[in-house]
Amino acid sequence: MIAKRNSFNQLPTLAMNPEKFKILYSAKKFRNHIINAIKTACTRIYLVALYLEDDEAGREILSELYKAKKKKPELDTSICVDWHRAQRGLIGEASSEGNAAMYKSFSDNNEYKIPIFGVPIHRKEIFGVLHLKGFIVDNQVIYSGASLNNLYLNYHDRYRFDRYHILNCKALADSMVQFIRQEIIDHPAVNDLTSDYKPSTKDIKTDIRQLRASLAQSSYQFISEKANPEQIAITPIVGIGKHQNRLNQIINQLITQAKKEIFICTPYFNLPKSIIKKIKIALNLGLKVTIIVGDKTANDFYISPKEKFKAIGGLPYLYEVNLRQFAKANQADISSCKLSINLWKHNDNSFHLKGIWVDKHYMLITGNNLNPRGWKLDLENAILIQDNFFYLTPQVEKEIENILRHTKPIFTYRQLEKVDNYPKNVKKLIRKIIRIKADHVLKHIL
Image 1 (cartoon, one colour):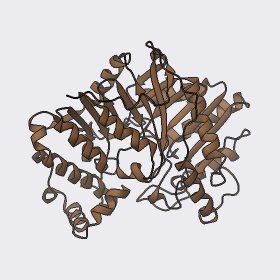
Image 2: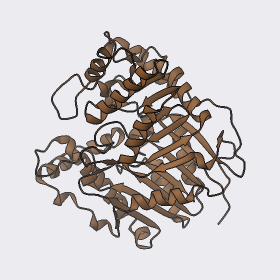
Image 3: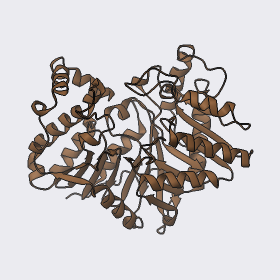
Image 4: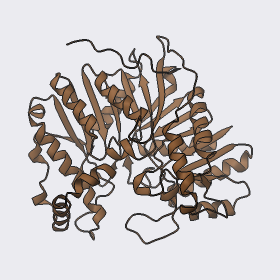
C-alpha cells in the first residue's frame, strides 16, 4: 500500500501531558464529576450545551452553580444554551415557556446573578441550533456530547449513553472561554434569558444573520505548541455551514488518513455523502471499518408501539431504513469482515455517542452527530487528539470495550427490519414520506 501523507503535520496544536487526559465511562460518573467540579471551582465556570432542562438534573446543576456563586461572588460564571430550545416545551408536548421560565425563577430568587445566554444560530430552530460542546471549570475542559437533563445525567435509573472526557489544559480552557466570550456572548444577537426583557426572535433577525456569518469565519485562537515525544497533541476545531467548514474538512481528512482501521460512532444513521464515499474508498483499500449505531429502540425519539404514536416517532425507523440500505449495498464487505456494523441497545436506555478513532493514533471527540444537519446547519465543535506514542491506548481500548459491551453485530442486512414489518402507523408514515420523496429533504435537516 502506498504510504499516505500526514494531513495533520501543519495543523496548529496544543501540547498536553497524557496523564492530564481522562476518560469517564458512565453517565453517572459524568454527573458526579460535573457537580464536584462546580463545588470546588475557584475562578471560572462556563457551561455550553444545547439545553439545561427544567427537571431534577437541571435544577441540581443550577442549584450547585448558585451555591458556588454565593460562596465565591467573584467566580466568573456563564451558561450558554440554544435560544430556541430554551423557550419552547418538549417536542410533542403542550406549549410552554420552556426552560427559560426556570432560569428566570432561579435568578429572581438568588442574590448573586448567573447569566444564562440564549444563542440563536438561525431564525428558525429547524435550520440550525447551538450544538457546541464543552464545560470549562477553572483549567479543565469537561467534554461530552451530552446536554444537561435527567436522561443524560442518569437520574431514575435511566441514561442516555454518551462519551465523557476530561482535559486538564489551561491553554485549551483559555481558548474555549475566549471563543465563548468574544464570538458568542459579546454578540448583540445573544441575550440573557434571566433578564426581565427578552427581545423576540423577529426583533433580532438581522443580528442573528450577522452572528451566523461571523461564526462561519471564526476559530479557536491559541499559540500553537509542538508536542514532544512524551506528550499528546490536541486541536480544538469549530465549524458551521456547508461552505469552508473547517470541522467538516478535518473529519474528512481524518478518515482519509487511516492506514489500518476506522472506528465510527453515530447515534442517528444518516452519514453525509462525503463520509460514505470515504468509507467505501477505505474498504476498497482493504482497511477495517467499524460503525457503532444505536438500535432504533435506543433512539431518543423512539415511541413504543404500546404508546400513542406521534409523527416524530417515525425518525428512528427512517434511520433504520438508511442503515438497511447501506448494509445491503455493502453486504460483501460485511461478509468478508472488512465492515462491521454493531447496534447498541441496553434495556430502555438511549444511545447518543459520536466520534471517530483512526489507527489508535487519532481520536476525535465531538458533539457532531456526523449527519447532514451537523454538516450544514448547526454550530459544532470537536477536539482532535493525536497520540503518536500510544499513551492513551489503555483508556481508549477500555472506552471502546465499554461501548461494545451492549452491542450486537449485523452479519446481514436482513437482520434489520423491512418497512413491511413496521407498526401500522409507522409503515403508513414511512411509505408516504418515500412516495412524496420527502425523505431526501428530511435527510438534510435531521
